Length: 65
Image (cartoon, rainbow, N blue to C red; front, side, top):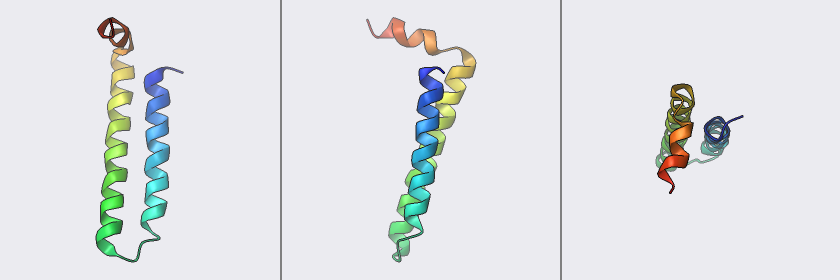
């Protein structure tokens, strides 16, 4: 499993966890904010999926020099 795939998986797990936390808040503004953060994690997961599919993993090593 590539770094990008692992990262996407971790971000999706965090998003799921945050969504479950959001349901516990009685304050709607707080719940909405936590849900927004969960959506952002999902978006980042998609970016890492796209990077993996596009074969951009090899570029990561070249840029770190």
